[in-house]
Every structure is written in structure tokens, then in C-alpha cells.
Image (tube, rainbow, N blue to C red; front, side, top):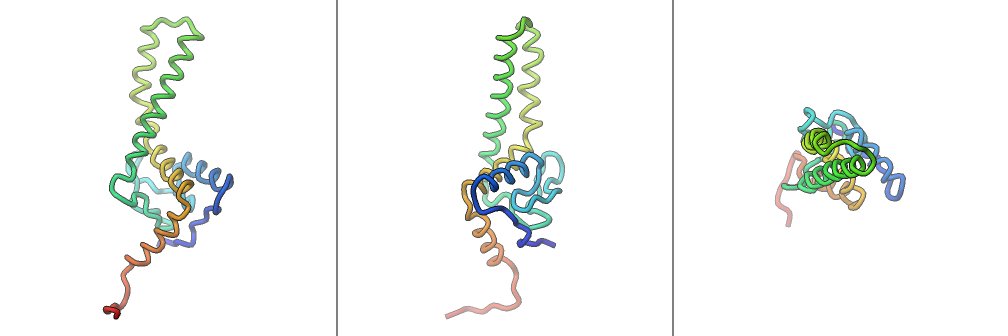
Length: 150
């Protein structure tokens, strides 16, 4: 069962950033640090199995993660290519055989990390996300009764 009280992020500052970065690089829930938030390597579950944190809060939420993934992977590839061009005597053909596959494979390998990193960045920038989501969860939770108020 989900336990919203398991959400244990520090309120702000470097401790919060450090915890969020470690959790994102280890593919854990950004809110509580639980493992098992991925169905498989590419597919993220809807909610954290431990704390119930909803990962994709709105349609298109992870578009920034896709951009982050592509930009980071390609900058790493280009940076390594420039390093090898400047500091080695490898021919251009050999470098193409190394770096063209790297430019294709690196975004695939980095994909799940970009999603968890995106959630971590979102939680670092918008500290009210947790409170807002807890209120939404309470409003959408089925209740026993309910009538119209005046």
C-alpha cells in the first residue's frame, strides 16, 4: 500500500539537491527513494509503489526529460569527439566508427536516468509539488459519503 508519509525530502538547499541527484542517478523515487519505480528499462510506473507519488502529473510532463536526454547524450559524444580529435592521432574514419554508434546508443542508455533526473529537477525547483500532489490525492481519493454542500 502507498504511504505518503514516506516522502522524506529535506525542505531546501544542498541536502535536498544531493538527495535528489543521488536518487535520480540510482533510478529511485525522487520523493522517498524507493526502488522498483520502473516496469522495465524504458517504462516508468504511474506511481511510486511505496509513497504513491504520481510521476507523470500532466500530459507532456516528460517532454523536458526527452530534450535533456538528447542534449546531454549528444554533448557527451561531441565533447569526447573533440577530445579525441585534439589529443590523438586516430584517423577520421576510425573516429566515425566509434562516435556515430555512440551518438545513437548513448541516448538509449541515458533514457531512464533522464526521466528520474527531470523529476528531481522539478522537485528541486518547485518545492510545493509534494504538498500540491498530496492535496490532489486527497481530493481524488474515494470517500464513503458525499453530498452537496450549501
